[in-house]
Structure formats: C-alpha cells, structure tokens
Length: 99
Picture 1 (cartoon, rainbow, N blue to C red):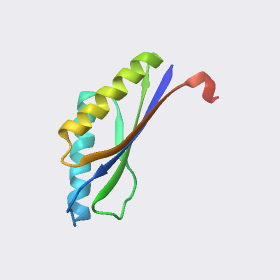
Picture 2: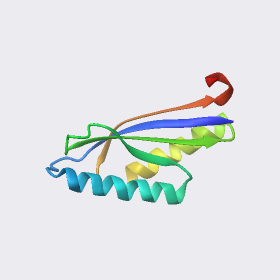
Picture 3: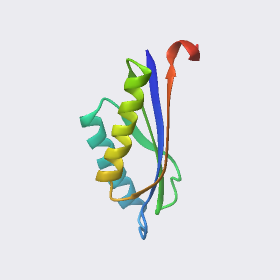
Picture 4: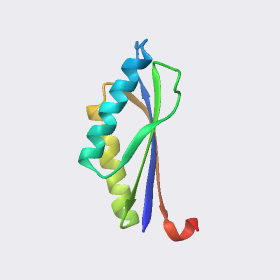
C-alpha cells in the first residue's frame, strides 16, 4: 500500500474576496473527489485572497500508479481551475516505510 500526497499553489490574480476563493476551492475539491477518490483541501495561505495552497491525499496500489495519478490530478487542476498553478509537488510513500 502506498500513499500519494501532493501540494499545489494557486494564484487567484486580482481576487479580493476570501469567500469567492473558498467557493472556488470547494468546487475544485468536489470535482476532484468525483473524478478520483482523493481528498483535496486548502492547507495554507488561508487569509490571502489571491493565493491558495491546496493539499491532496489518497491511497494507491503502487508507486507507479501513484505517480501517474498525481500527474493526472495536477493536469486536471491546471486545466479546470480558474486560478493559475504556480507550484506543484507530490510524493508517493510506501506505508511500510511510515511505520
């Protein structure tokens, strides 16, 4: 068993509303949850209306599948988000190595 974890920094250029940012992140989280069995949520830059850092995590069967799924997720976010992706990171860790 492997765990896929990732972090994506988004730039909501010109946004001045935290409410709008949270609504857009909620819509993105719902869309990614429907497409994959992942959890995506805001993990940093909570009080900055133009910046958002989202994290996601899921369990995957293999390291290779995790890496492929991470690329799919990051591409999906880049295409379907109204914000620009500034930075993305991901890691696949074997559960045995975490204990």
